[in-house]
Picture 1 (cartoon, rainbow, N blue to C red):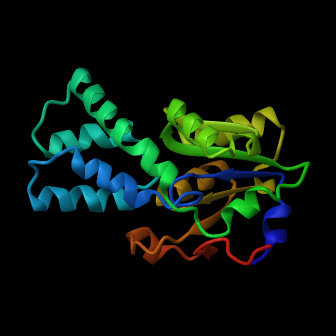
Picture 2: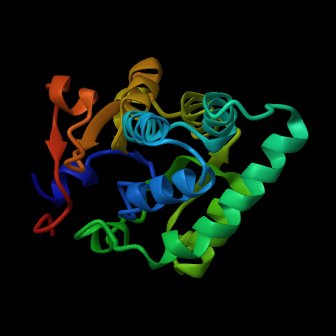
Length: 214
């Protein structure tokens, strides 16, 4: 696989965690730190769920993890935990390693090609992260939570009057694959070696990183 694989698509949709930045484990640490009194069984349950559902937003994960810890799930409590999570994770994501080779791919975008971020990270937060990384100008549109990924793809296809077969979604989770499948977009799986259930059953195109593709 080389740069031509990406160049032939009119629009490339990019997940962020695990595709652009190696930040899946960073967020796992942040989730687990929210529950210092949790027993090992609950922490392992959180770990398994997070790694299996990398594309799911915290708006869905945090209420679930609160419930598993027998904590209140009212809106106020959810917002408190979301705030704690955000405070601990933004700089850690910025400081995390790039997925190897991805920065060169991003900066080699063709003039007539569109790059679009579709991520479970909240909109305001992903905007801050991309700005601090000095890559926000590489993307023609950025979709964060609460916009669902399949909805983001459909909006983009409609706005730019593009056929789904002329687009590609690069993701690292089953939820990314499902968003591509629903939308009719092509899909490449970035296998982050977490040995997820999806990784074991996925039979399509997969890559470990973007090294050597230029």
